[in-house]
Length: 113
Length: 113
Image 1 (cartoon, rainbow over the protein chains, first blue to last red):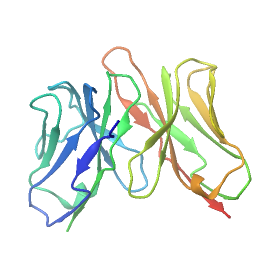
Image 2 (image 1 turned 90 degrees about the vertical axis):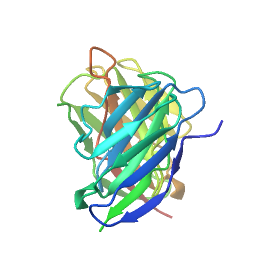
Image 3 (image 1 turned 30 degrees about the horizontal axis):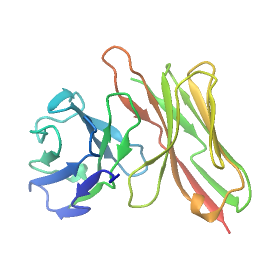
Image 4 (image 1 turned 135 degrees about the horizontal axis):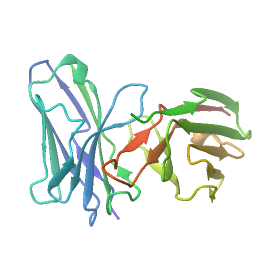
C-alpha cells in the first residue's frame, strides 16, 4: 500500500509570509497527526484528527497555526505569518485508529529566513 | 508532562558489532514503539511493544518492554552500514484524555565499515 504522502518536501520563505503543507494519509487510516520536529529532537505533536474532527489541538499555536481535514482524508497545515522559530521539519502521520501504530510521511522541511 | 530519556545520544561502532540503546520514562506507558529515521525522511516504525515484559524481534532487532512499564531497550545484532540513522523510542498511553505519542530525543548511530 502507498505510504503517507506529503508536499512540498522543502519550502524556503521569508518571515511574515504564509505557508501551507499538505498531507495524504494511508488509505483507510482514520487518524491523522501533524508533528513538528526541531533539529536534534524527536517529533512533537501539534494536532490529531479523528476523521474530520480535531480531537487534540492543545499543542497547536493557534495564533498563527491552523489546520483542516475537511473530508476526513487529506489535511492541510498552515502557518500565517511564519516566524524564524518556525523553521523545522513538519511531519504528517496516520494510523488505522487512535493508539495503533503511526506511520509517518517524509516530512516538509521549512526554512524561514 | 511526560519525559523520555533516551541514551546514549550517539554511538560510533564497527560493522559487525552489537548495539544496545534504551529509553526511560518518568511515567508509565501502555505501548512502546521504536522508530528509525534516515536523513531527509520521516521515522519508520521498527518494533511495537504492547505488554510489560514483552520481548519482540524483527530480524536483527530485538526490543523489550520493561516490566515496570517505564523503560524499554532496543538491541541491534551484527550491525551493518545501512543501520546508520537516528533511532527514536516513543511511548504511548491510551487511557483518559492523553493519547499523545511522546518521543525521546533519539540515538544517532554511526557504523564504520
